[in-house]
Length: 406
Image: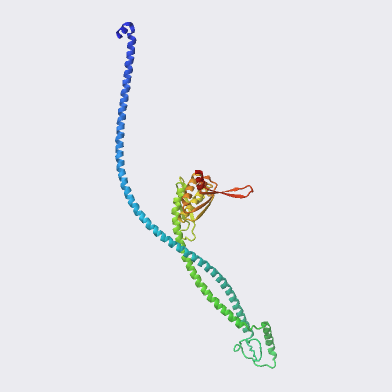
Protein backbone atom coordinates (compact mmCIF):
# COMPACT_ATOMS: atom_id res chain seq x y z
CA UNK A 1 0.00 0.00 0.00
CA UNK A 2 2.87 2.32 0.72
CA UNK A 3 4.34 1.53 -2.66
CA UNK A 4 1.06 2.23 -4.36
CA UNK A 5 0.73 5.50 -2.42
CA UNK A 6 4.25 6.52 -3.37
CA UNK A 7 3.68 5.58 -6.98
CA UNK A 8 0.49 7.52 -6.97
CA UNK A 9 2.23 10.86 -6.32
CA UNK A 10 1.70 11.00 -2.52
CA UNK A 11 5.31 10.16 -1.66
CA UNK A 12 6.46 13.69 -0.82
CA UNK A 13 3.65 14.35 1.63
CA UNK A 14 4.08 10.99 3.30
CA UNK A 15 7.80 11.58 3.62
CA UNK A 16 7.19 14.88 5.35
CA UNK A 17 4.81 13.18 7.82
CA UNK A 18 7.35 10.47 8.54
CA UNK A 19 10.10 13.05 9.14
CA UNK A 20 7.82 14.97 11.53
CA UNK A 21 7.08 11.78 13.44
CA UNK A 22 10.81 10.98 13.61
CA UNK A 23 11.48 14.49 14.94
CA UNK A 24 8.77 14.11 17.60
CA UNK A 25 10.21 10.74 18.58
CA UNK A 26 13.68 12.24 18.93
CA UNK A 27 12.30 15.13 21.05
CA UNK A 28 10.46 12.63 23.25
CA UNK A 29 13.65 10.57 23.57
CA UNK A 30 15.55 13.72 24.66
CA UNK A 31 12.89 14.54 27.23
CA UNK A 32 13.00 10.96 28.50
CA UNK A 33 16.79 11.18 28.84
CA UNK A 34 16.47 14.46 30.76
CA UNK A 35 13.84 12.97 33.05
CA UNK A 36 16.01 9.90 33.57
CA UNK A 37 18.97 12.12 34.52
CA UNK A 38 16.75 14.11 36.85
CA UNK A 39 15.44 10.89 38.39
CA UNK A 40 19.00 9.66 38.91
CA UNK A 41 19.97 12.94 40.63
CA UNK A 42 16.90 12.77 42.84
CA UNK A 43 17.72 9.14 43.61
CA UNK A 44 21.20 10.23 44.68
CA UNK A 45 19.71 12.97 46.88
CA UNK A 46 17.22 10.52 48.40
CA UNK A 47 20.01 8.05 49.12
CA UNK A 48 22.00 10.85 50.81
CA UNK A 49 18.96 11.88 52.85
CA UNK A 50 18.34 8.24 53.77
CA UNK A 51 21.93 7.93 54.97
CA UNK A 52 21.60 11.20 56.97
CA UNK A 53 18.37 9.97 58.53
CA UNK A 54 19.99 6.69 59.45
CA UNK A 55 22.85 8.58 61.11
CA UNK A 56 20.38 10.85 62.95
CA UNK A 57 18.42 7.81 64.07
CA UNK A 58 21.59 6.27 65.48
CA UNK A 59 22.44 9.59 67.16
CA UNK A 60 18.96 9.83 68.64
CA UNK A 61 19.17 6.29 69.94
CA UNK A 62 22.48 7.15 71.60
CA UNK A 63 21.00 10.37 73.01
CA UNK A 64 17.97 8.43 74.27
CA UNK A 65 20.18 6.00 76.14
CA UNK A 66 22.18 8.93 77.57
CA UNK A 67 18.92 10.65 78.54
CA UNK A 68 17.71 7.50 80.28
CA UNK A 69 20.94 7.35 82.28
CA UNK A 70 20.61 11.06 83.10
CA UNK A 71 16.99 10.47 84.11
CA UNK A 72 18.00 7.68 86.46
CA UNK A 73 20.69 9.91 88.00
CA UNK A 74 18.21 12.77 88.28
CA UNK A 75 15.70 10.51 90.04
CA UNK A 76 18.34 9.49 92.57
CA UNK A 77 19.30 13.13 93.09
CA UNK A 78 15.60 13.98 93.43
CA UNK A 79 15.23 11.45 96.22
CA UNK A 80 18.21 13.00 98.03
CA UNK A 81 16.74 16.49 97.52
CA UNK A 82 13.33 15.35 98.81
CA UNK A 83 14.97 13.98 101.93
CA UNK A 84 16.84 17.26 102.41
CA UNK A 85 13.61 19.19 101.79
CA UNK A 86 11.83 17.15 104.45
CA UNK A 87 14.58 17.96 106.95
CA UNK A 88 14.45 21.63 105.93
CA UNK A 89 10.66 21.72 106.41
CA UNK A 90 11.08 20.23 109.88
CA UNK A 91 13.69 22.86 110.72
CA UNK A 92 11.47 25.58 109.24
CA UNK A 93 8.56 24.50 111.45
CA UNK A 94 10.78 24.74 114.53
CA UNK A 95 12.07 28.13 113.42
CA UNK A 96 8.52 29.37 112.77
CA UNK A 97 7.51 28.32 116.27
CA UNK A 98 10.54 30.11 117.68
CA UNK A 99 9.68 33.17 115.55
CA UNK A 100 6.13 33.18 116.89
CA UNK A 101 7.48 33.04 120.44
CA UNK A 102 9.90 35.88 119.71
CA UNK A 103 7.11 37.96 118.19
CA UNK A 104 4.99 37.39 121.29
CA UNK A 105 7.93 38.43 123.47
CA UNK A 106 8.47 41.49 121.30
CA UNK A 107 4.81 42.45 121.70
CA UNK A 108 5.19 42.10 125.46
CA UNK A 109 8.35 44.22 125.39
CA UNK A 110 6.63 46.85 123.31
CA UNK A 111 3.73 46.98 125.75
CA UNK A 112 6.15 47.20 128.68
CA UNK A 113 8.07 49.91 126.88
CA UNK A 114 4.86 51.88 126.29
CA UNK A 115 3.91 51.56 129.96
CA UNK A 116 7.44 52.52 131.01
CA UNK A 117 7.37 55.58 128.79
CA UNK A 118 4.01 56.62 130.19
CA UNK A 119 5.24 56.14 133.76
CA UNK A 120 8.46 57.97 132.92
CA UNK A 121 6.56 60.94 131.51
CA UNK A 122 4.28 61.04 134.55
CA UNK A 123 7.29 60.80 136.87
CA UNK A 124 9.09 63.55 134.94
CA UNK A 125 6.06 65.81 135.31
CA UNK A 126 5.85 65.03 139.03
CA UNK A 127 9.59 65.57 139.38
CA UNK A 128 9.38 68.95 137.63
CA UNK A 129 6.54 70.04 139.86
CA UNK A 130 8.45 68.80 142.92
CA UNK A 131 11.56 70.74 141.87
CA UNK A 132 9.49 73.88 141.41
CA UNK A 133 7.84 73.40 144.79
CA UNK A 134 11.20 72.64 146.43
CA UNK A 135 12.78 75.75 144.93
CA UNK A 136 9.86 77.85 146.14
CA UNK A 137 10.11 76.39 149.64
CA UNK A 138 13.87 76.90 149.74
CA UNK A 139 13.39 80.50 148.64
CA UNK A 140 10.80 81.04 151.35
CA UNK A 141 13.08 79.41 153.94
CA UNK A 142 16.04 81.55 152.88
CA UNK A 143 13.86 84.66 153.06
CA UNK A 144 12.66 83.72 156.55
CA UNK A 145 16.23 83.11 157.72
CA UNK A 146 17.36 86.45 156.36
CA UNK A 147 14.48 88.30 157.96
CA UNK A 148 15.14 86.58 161.32
CA UNK A 149 18.82 87.47 161.14
CA UNK A 150 17.99 91.09 160.24
CA UNK A 151 15.20 91.68 162.72
CA UNK A 152 16.07 89.48 165.74
CA UNK A 153 19.84 89.69 165.86
CA UNK A 154 19.87 91.54 169.20
CA UNK A 155 16.50 90.59 170.73
CA UNK A 156 15.48 87.77 173.06
CA UNK A 157 11.86 87.33 174.19
CA UNK A 158 10.89 86.00 177.60
CA UNK A 159 7.90 83.69 177.82
CA UNK A 160 5.85 82.88 180.93
CA UNK A 161 4.90 79.26 181.45
CA UNK A 162 1.37 80.27 182.48
CA UNK A 163 0.78 82.19 179.29
CA UNK A 164 -1.09 80.20 176.65
CA UNK A 165 -0.53 80.85 173.02
CA UNK A 166 1.49 79.66 170.04
CA UNK A 167 4.76 77.84 170.51
CA UNK A 168 7.62 80.33 170.95
CA UNK A 169 10.38 80.50 168.38
CA UNK A 170 13.60 78.61 169.34
CA UNK A 171 15.78 81.74 169.52
CA UNK A 172 17.59 80.91 172.78
CA UNK A 173 21.32 81.17 172.33
CA UNK A 174 20.96 82.95 169.01
CA UNK A 175 20.57 86.53 170.29
CA UNK A 176 22.33 88.70 172.83
CA UNK A 177 20.56 89.55 176.11
CA UNK A 178 19.93 93.29 176.51
CA UNK A 179 20.03 95.15 179.86
CA UNK A 180 16.76 96.35 181.39
CA UNK A 181 16.29 100.05 180.63
CA UNK A 182 14.04 102.27 182.77
CA UNK A 183 14.48 105.36 180.66
CA UNK A 184 15.60 105.68 177.11
CA UNK A 185 18.58 107.84 176.61
CA UNK A 186 18.28 110.54 173.95
CA UNK A 187 21.03 108.97 171.89
CA UNK A 188 19.01 105.67 171.72
CA UNK A 189 15.83 107.19 170.33
CA UNK A 190 17.01 106.82 166.73
CA UNK A 191 17.89 103.19 167.31
CA UNK A 192 14.52 102.51 168.95
CA UNK A 193 12.74 104.14 166.04
CA UNK A 194 14.68 101.99 163.60
CA UNK A 195 13.86 98.80 165.53
CA UNK A 196 10.19 99.68 165.68
CA UNK A 197 10.18 100.15 161.91
CA UNK A 198 11.80 96.75 161.54
CA UNK A 199 9.16 95.16 163.79
CA UNK A 200 6.39 96.83 161.85
CA UNK A 201 7.89 95.76 158.56
CA UNK A 202 8.38 92.20 159.81
CA UNK A 203 4.67 91.79 160.56
CA UNK A 204 3.21 88.67 162.16
CA UNK A 205 5.56 85.77 162.97
CA UNK A 206 4.82 82.32 161.43
CA UNK A 207 5.36 79.97 164.33
CA UNK A 208 4.61 76.93 162.11
CA UNK A 209 7.61 77.59 159.88
CA UNK A 210 9.64 74.82 161.56
CA UNK A 211 6.93 72.21 160.95
CA UNK A 212 6.50 73.40 157.39
CA UNK A 213 10.24 73.14 156.84
CA UNK A 214 10.25 69.55 158.16
CA UNK A 215 7.37 68.62 155.85
CA UNK A 216 9.07 70.22 152.86
CA UNK A 217 12.37 68.50 153.72
CA UNK A 218 10.68 65.10 153.99
CA UNK A 219 8.88 65.74 150.72
CA UNK A 220 12.17 66.74 149.08
CA UNK A 221 13.88 63.56 150.39
CA UNK A 222 11.01 61.44 149.07
CA UNK A 223 11.12 63.12 145.66
CA UNK A 224 14.90 62.70 145.54
CA UNK A 225 14.50 58.97 146.18
CA UNK A 226 11.79 58.77 143.56
CA UNK A 227 14.03 60.63 141.12
CA UNK A 228 16.84 58.13 141.67
CA UNK A 229 14.41 55.27 141.08
CA UNK A 230 13.17 56.95 137.91
CA UNK A 231 16.70 57.39 136.65
CA UNK A 232 17.38 53.70 137.23
CA UNK A 233 14.14 52.82 135.45
CA UNK A 234 15.10 55.14 132.60
CA UNK A 235 18.46 53.37 132.24
CA UNK A 236 16.73 49.97 132.17
CA UNK A 237 14.19 51.18 129.61
CA UNK A 238 16.97 52.56 127.43
CA UNK A 239 18.66 49.16 127.56
CA UNK A 240 15.39 47.52 126.48
CA UNK A 241 15.05 50.06 123.68
CA UNK A 242 18.58 49.32 122.50
CA UNK A 243 17.85 45.57 122.50
CA UNK A 244 14.60 46.15 120.60
CA UNK A 245 16.44 48.33 118.07
CA UNK A 246 18.95 45.54 117.46
CA UNK A 247 16.14 42.98 117.13
CA UNK A 248 14.18 45.22 114.75
CA UNK A 249 17.27 45.90 112.64
CA UNK A 250 18.00 42.18 112.40
CA UNK A 251 14.40 41.32 111.48
CA UNK A 252 14.23 44.25 109.03
CA UNK A 253 17.42 43.14 107.30
CA UNK A 254 16.18 39.55 107.01
CA UNK A 255 12.77 40.63 105.69
CA UNK A 256 14.30 43.18 103.31
CA UNK A 257 16.68 40.62 101.80
CA UNK A 258 13.83 38.13 101.29
CA UNK A 259 11.51 40.76 99.77
CA UNK A 260 14.31 42.07 97.51
CA UNK A 261 14.90 38.61 96.01
CA UNK A 262 11.16 37.96 95.57
CA UNK A 263 10.60 41.45 94.14
CA UNK A 264 13.05 40.83 91.28
CA UNK A 265 11.25 37.61 90.34
CA UNK A 266 7.72 39.08 90.62
CA UNK A 267 8.72 42.21 88.66
CA UNK A 268 10.09 40.11 85.78
CA UNK A 269 6.96 37.94 85.81
CA UNK A 270 4.53 40.91 85.79
CA UNK A 271 6.35 42.87 83.08
CA UNK A 272 7.23 39.84 80.97
CA UNK A 273 10.93 40.65 81.26
CA UNK A 274 13.18 43.40 82.58
CA UNK A 275 14.57 43.64 86.08
CA UNK A 276 14.21 45.72 89.24
CA UNK A 277 15.86 45.99 92.63
CA UNK A 278 15.25 47.51 96.06
CA UNK A 279 17.91 49.88 97.42
CA UNK A 280 18.41 51.17 100.98
CA UNK A 281 19.01 54.92 101.13
CA UNK A 282 21.13 54.54 104.29
CA UNK A 283 22.40 51.02 104.77
CA UNK A 284 24.40 52.06 107.87
CA UNK A 285 21.31 53.21 109.84
CA UNK A 286 18.53 50.65 109.32
CA UNK A 287 16.15 52.31 111.81
CA UNK A 288 15.97 55.55 109.79
CA UNK A 289 16.73 54.34 106.28
CA UNK A 290 14.40 54.65 103.32
CA UNK A 291 13.84 52.30 100.39
CA UNK A 292 14.14 53.23 96.70
CA UNK A 293 13.17 51.21 93.63
CA UNK A 294 15.25 51.11 90.44
CA UNK A 295 13.53 49.42 87.52
CA UNK A 296 14.64 48.46 84.01
CA UNK A 297 11.69 47.68 81.74
CA UNK A 298 12.09 45.29 78.77
CA UNK A 299 13.99 47.03 76.00
CA UNK A 300 14.75 50.14 78.08
CA UNK A 301 17.51 51.33 80.36
CA UNK A 302 17.32 51.53 84.15
CA UNK A 303 15.21 54.36 85.65
CA UNK A 304 13.80 55.45 88.98
CA UNK A 305 10.07 55.46 89.70
CA UNK A 306 9.75 59.14 88.76
CA UNK A 307 10.65 58.34 85.10
CA UNK A 308 7.97 55.62 84.73
CA UNK A 309 4.45 56.13 83.41
CA UNK A 310 1.36 55.80 85.56
CA UNK A 311 0.62 52.23 84.50
CA UNK A 312 4.26 51.19 84.94
CA UNK A 313 4.38 52.67 88.43
CA UNK A 314 1.08 50.98 89.31
CA UNK A 315 2.40 47.60 88.12
CA UNK A 316 5.69 48.17 89.99
CA UNK A 317 3.72 48.89 93.18
CA UNK A 318 1.74 45.68 92.61
CA UNK A 319 5.03 43.79 92.26
CA UNK A 320 6.18 45.15 95.63
CA UNK A 321 2.85 44.27 97.32
CA UNK A 322 2.87 40.76 95.83
CA UNK A 323 6.47 40.29 96.98
CA UNK A 324 5.47 41.15 100.54
CA UNK A 325 2.53 38.73 100.32
CA UNK A 326 4.82 35.97 99.07
CA UNK A 327 7.31 36.51 101.89
CA UNK A 328 4.67 36.96 104.61
CA UNK A 329 1.13 36.04 103.48
CA UNK A 330 -1.79 37.85 105.11
CA UNK A 331 -5.37 36.56 105.48
CA UNK A 332 -6.85 39.42 103.41
CA UNK A 333 -5.63 41.88 100.76
CA UNK A 334 -7.79 44.72 99.37
CA UNK A 335 -6.86 46.19 95.95
CA UNK A 336 -8.75 49.30 94.82
CA UNK A 337 -8.67 49.74 91.00
CA UNK A 338 -4.96 49.02 90.70
CA UNK A 339 -5.52 47.72 87.14
CA UNK A 340 -7.20 50.90 85.86
CA UNK A 341 -4.08 52.07 83.97
CA UNK A 342 -2.89 48.64 82.73
CA UNK A 343 -3.19 47.32 79.18
CA UNK A 344 -4.60 43.88 78.34
CA UNK A 345 -1.26 42.03 78.41
CA UNK A 346 -0.32 43.48 81.81
CA UNK A 347 -3.82 42.80 83.15
CA UNK A 348 -3.44 39.15 82.09
CA UNK A 349 -0.14 38.77 83.97
CA UNK A 350 -1.64 40.66 86.94
CA UNK A 351 -4.58 38.22 87.06
CA UNK A 352 -2.23 35.22 86.84
CA UNK A 353 -0.26 36.53 89.83
CA UNK A 354 -3.47 37.16 91.84
CA UNK A 355 -4.67 33.65 91.03
CA UNK A 356 -1.32 32.21 92.19
CA UNK A 357 -1.31 34.13 95.49
CA UNK A 358 -4.98 33.40 96.23
CA UNK A 359 -3.94 29.97 97.53
CA UNK A 360 -2.79 31.64 100.79
CA UNK A 361 -4.48 35.09 100.73
CA UNK A 362 -8.08 36.11 100.05
CA UNK A 363 -8.19 39.07 97.64
CA UNK A 364 -10.93 41.69 97.59
CA UNK A 365 -10.53 43.63 94.32
CA UNK A 366 -12.45 46.74 93.25
CA UNK A 367 -12.24 46.93 89.45
CA UNK A 368 -14.00 47.89 86.22
CA UNK A 369 -11.84 45.62 84.06
CA UNK A 370 -13.73 42.70 82.52
CA UNK A 371 -10.63 40.48 82.38
CA UNK A 372 -10.04 40.96 86.12
CA UNK A 373 -13.70 40.24 86.85
CA UNK A 374 -13.44 36.93 84.97
CA UNK A 375 -10.64 35.88 87.34
CA UNK A 376 -12.84 36.26 90.45
CA UNK A 377 -14.73 33.43 92.12
CA UNK A 378 -17.48 35.66 93.56
CA UNK A 379 -18.60 38.94 91.95
CA UNK A 380 -20.45 41.71 93.81
CA UNK A 381 -22.02 44.45 91.73
CA UNK A 382 -23.30 47.81 92.98
CA UNK A 383 -26.30 49.23 91.11
CA UNK A 384 -29.02 51.81 91.72
CA UNK A 385 -32.55 50.61 92.30
CA UNK A 386 -35.83 52.23 91.36
CA UNK A 387 -35.89 54.09 94.68
CA UNK A 388 -32.48 55.67 93.92
CA UNK A 389 -30.86 53.54 96.63
CA UNK A 390 -27.76 51.44 96.06
CA UNK A 391 -28.23 47.69 95.78
CA UNK A 392 -25.71 44.87 95.96
CA UNK A 393 -25.86 42.00 93.49
CA UNK A 394 -23.70 38.92 94.11
CA UNK A 395 -22.78 36.09 91.75
CA UNK A 396 -20.73 32.99 92.48
CA UNK A 397 -19.13 32.03 89.18
CA UNK A 398 -18.51 28.35 90.04
CA UNK A 399 -22.21 27.84 90.90
CA UNK A 400 -23.21 29.71 87.75
CA UNK A 401 -21.05 27.36 85.68
CA UNK A 402 -22.68 24.32 87.33
CA UNK A 403 -26.17 25.72 86.58
CA UNK A 404 -25.17 26.46 82.97
CA UNK A 405 -23.78 22.93 82.62
CA UNK A 406 -27.07 21.43 83.94
